[in-house]
Image (tube, rainbow, N blue to C red; front, side):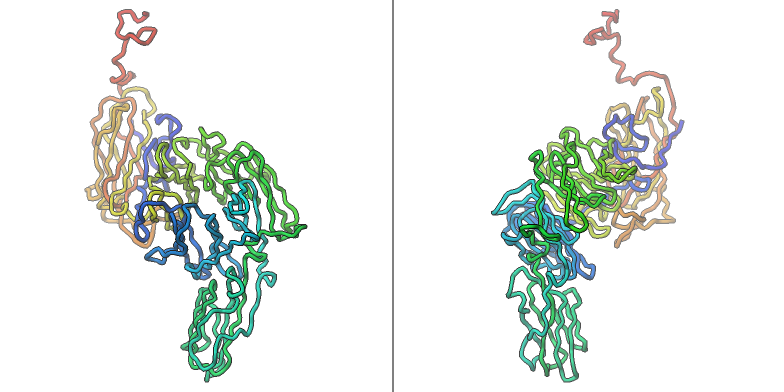
Length: 635
């Protein structure tokens, strides 16, 4: 008889015995990813900037400039830094070894990244990542974890000198983005006449360190006539005349303006400024009788367990996920009334970042029963508008992992769960889960957090102050990528003993890559039965497929760096003992691309219906099961 796997679509199954999983499923392994009907060797890893010393990088975050450029931030053990393209540059030093909560916020005043922790509450205009603005004001705001949505900051896990509150959900003013919070300045003198270059600091900054400016223009007169400088929103100023140029730091107010010629008339600046601690995203105050748009606090005390994370649900409400329950906060559109109530008591998460809001709903690891964690999604009931919980990916044994330092994120079609194998001290595993395709694949890279930029995925290390780009390239920082893929325990639909003569395998391979093929019969241990080499005669070099360095994208594999991969169709001749079941293992041993899309068992010969020989050594067993080879098996 013959048997063929024409597509690999099932991923890894670890709940059922390996004989009872889908034909194309994996019963174990790591660094092979199920995608588009094939299994693909996971991409490599490389350091971003210099390798760090012992420590950790628990936070990575991309901020966005107005022009769309991105800034990569990280919090390492005692520093907050940004990446300038080649090196990590300090923003703040001497910090405590605690996580930071980051959020992006865009308004008419600019594009910002806001971060909060027990060390401070800061706002960075991403045009000037090295110029943080301190927002902390004990009479206006708090230290804690934050979410910014619809012009308002939500804060929980409050931890400052005034109060420790783990069950209260706080809200700031709604940023009006108008003259309520913006102050316009016109005709501000910036220096004496008769010069070409003017430098200094705009006057607004002297009135408060938490202020920032925007919408800047400079005006003056030169011999040729009026000359004006307009704000490009990225920290540069464009002159109306050739030869003029300028820069502005929105956070500090520092400017440098060079006119096209010596000025002959008054030189002035016009701009607007804001202070986020005054009726903005860092102002949590409210009137004695609260008015719409002001701050608030809602207690979410039932059960006494702390709020671990707040995420936006598919219905637009805010869901506070706790250790043993969840709250739902719904705020009316006019901000006059709100409903704050317990949503469920049978759900809970193990850690702050063990959940993520996706287009399909809120996905989290439900550890209400700690011994049996379940991957769960809160999504709209298809028969109504209520949000319900559903368990997903029930074929994977999530209890094999420890989620104490877990982190959830999305990347292309995948949900990523950063965790660690039970008993290990640091995160060492990333579970790649295709929720729609119902697949799980295991990637063995150490990570505490992630940030993504298009097809590029970055992770922070739990072992050192380092950041790595992963699933990129074909090597692990110059070394081969450790890997293996185990198939199912195949019995070919019969309990009879069998022998197999041929194994055919098809896919794409790099000329420098090799794939070892191992076989285990009746749990006797794996033996090498052949190797597919990228330089083999069974590789078709007449046509190649361009393979990019990024491996997960929704479309055809591609990237900035392209390498060729060639189709192979390899047949391995086998000499097997008689077996009841067999299992295949693949191990890539070189550096280069490799995938497998078809596996064919050929000339499987069927023999007698007996148990394997290794199990036949105990016959005529006593009724107690303790004595064998009796003359009379009744005893």
